[in-house]
Length: 82
Figure 1: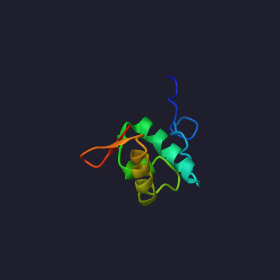
Figure 2: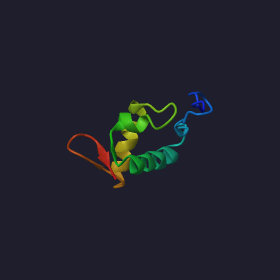
Figure 3: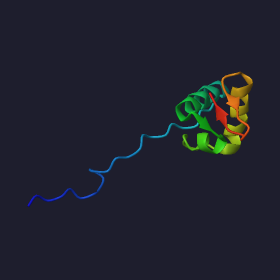
Figure 4: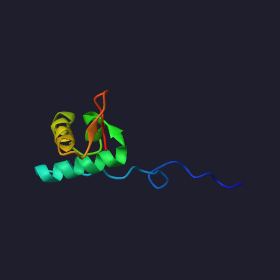
């Protein structure tokens, strides 16, 4: 009887690494726009989770900027879509 593989680091699938929160405003806007495109619809908390050191309080104004630049729209529920 063949031995079954044991769970462990060699057999586990890890999620892709999250990029760090960008330092410059133009990079933050581009990163939030890209994350929102990948997510489809999200709020600041969900977008923040896609970055290392991402905080909803920092992402929220950036989402508003992205919407103000007509790169996204805010839904009635307070989420953003591209």
